Length: 239
Ligand code: 4FV
Image (tube, rainbow, N blue to C red):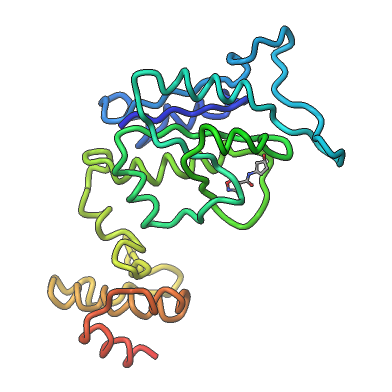
């Protein structure tokens, strides 16, 4: 998978791109991530990328020409899905992550200031994605969130692919509780079933606890979750 990123702060991506899962995926060649500085696409001697808003009002707006040049030059010989990270976008969720992970190429546009000139959206943006209903200072962190989430769907990036399939939300449910050594923590013991070696019983316990966690922490998910009749029966006993 190829992912291009356009930003005025490429240095923000340094450690993120060379650490852990993403770092290994790039070394293995499963992921090519190209971060480019928007200022490299200005022909302004001072590499200016923002200007005052037409109609007045506070703040600055990112001017269109550098974005148009950047997106078109980075799309040469490619046809990436061009995604602008912005609060106006469709909310990023597991379904959107899987949809974007199915694309061979993504180009992520990271805005700053009050936003980007609207003509950029009209001319070179396929879709907008938001990571949540709050305003950040830039699209860089949302881009990193999207890259991390999508990368986990790329075959071979996560060693335990099964763990990705079992991830929260993939099943429509939250994850079950996890325990590890020591067996007792300040008087709190591990649920005995997890020490029983009875894998069928352990699987039943984990499904029940995933249903309980979802019912208590995210009841909104239950409505959309593809639950079996048996799971619905178990759910009744959890309430
Ligand atoms: C954002 C979000 C976000 C808005 C103005 C960058 C900022 C500034 N992006 N999900 N929430 N972007 O707040 O994606 O240009």
